[in-house]
Length: 184
Image (cartoon, rainbow, N blue to C red; front, side, top):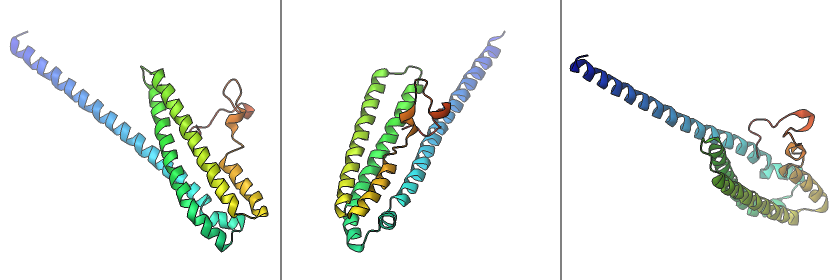
């Protein structure tokens, strides 16, 4: 081969390498943006459903709250909802980070332990905020309303959660595994 031909081949190889790098970079950027957009859409949809379900109107209708009870409710409800929203956003970020770490080829178990502890801490914080909210709610309810309040909060605490019934093989009742997106 003459030197001019070798020179062109070297430049062609360099160009191909650069094109491959650019392509892979764009794929990675697009994948990250898609993941973030997907998480945000899923979180906002769940948040919207819960916002309607546990809105002031919902509690007024289900519990039969009168106007003075609603006035009291309007004082403590926004604080709880904002705090719960922030905690839930933190949980989503930590769980996403944990999944990314578990999926990595060089998975760092020390980091996974820290993420697990952080998720546990936020879960505990959310449950503390929830019981404080419940206790505030309970103070404005009459006896018959408190019974209905217990039913509403049993849904919030997801007492029918199948994850409590998982056996040794990680399957729920009837041998069914956990559905995608239902990881807590």
